[in-house]
Amino acid sequence: MADVRAEIDRIDGQLVALLRERTGYIDRAAELKPALGLPARIDDRVEEVVAKVRARAMAEGLDPALAEVLWRRLIDWSIDREEARIGRD
Image (cartoon, rainbow, N blue to C red):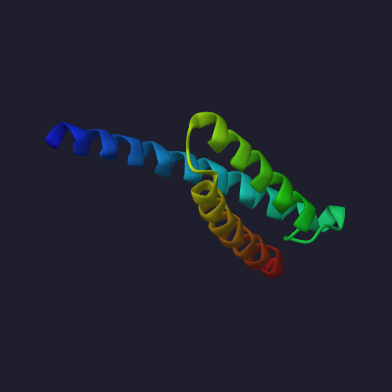
């Protein structure tokens, strides 16, 4: 069991690093959107991202409903972050 837990911990570390990298791009988007006249939330883009994630999940053998729930939460958090950063400027 210890080896399984160690692998889960390793994967969790990778996920955290990837989320930090993604957050950097969210911050960059928040810098660019005002000059482009774009809001933080662009519904078409949200649906595009979710569709891509669902397709990727299916291809990888992951429940697409789980992937969608996780990504919608991640997207909501990201949009909140963008709105806070845009409002701060």
